[in-house]
Image (cartoon, rainbow, N blue to C red; front, side, top):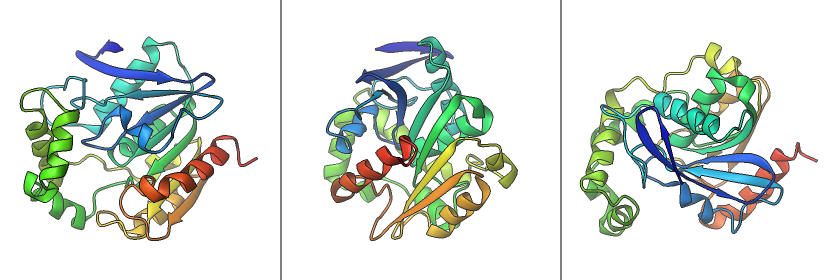
Amino acid sequence: MIAHVNGIDLHWESHGEGEPLVWLHGFMGTGADWRHVFPDALPGYRLIAPDLPGHGASTARPGPYSFGASADDVVSLLDSIGLNRVSVIGVSGGGITALHMATRQAHRIARLVIVSAPASFPPQARAIQREFSETMLGPAETARLRECHTRDGQVDALIAQARAFADANDPAFTDADLAAITADTLIVFGDRDFLYPVSLACDLRRAIPRSWLWVVPNGGHGPIFGAHAAPFREVAAAFLRGWD
């Protein structure tokens, strides 16, 4: 399905029935990435999975990519389908987008799961972003990306945006920003994340009032895929139910 919001076409899918649960993929991913974690939509939830702006089948806003603008687009999508209050799982860049949603419109977020998403980019991440290229991805990953992002120049544009993050000011959440989040929040980080040290997760835990921190042993960036998917499903489902 396509929603026309804020001057762009936002592609989204809906799976299952029940309480609305929004999946926000990482930068250079697509909404369909949820299938690498959940064999099916979580029982009792309607899973809503957009392709974030410029990704997959969604068109891009002009100018540099903005996680804040992406949050506005997701909120506009929710408005268009009549959803006032949702739970959100956001991974990496999708987690940054989710943080924008939760700090700007706290009343709309019931529960929040943030995976590998920092309040701001640390120097080690900016150094990698500044040099980001297809060479760093390798041929297999580049081929996979071109299968997901099929418009002419789309992958090249995403790579250029990733490099631009090195000198951007988004994200730049302050402790006061994060203190405005009212949703119960589960923060998930890997202890071997090459981009974001666990100390950043601890900072989020201290700043977000009703938050829990899960550090995944031997987990890298986005430690919810592959062998980590099953334990994440179990923990995330329990959290979304209220730890019952």
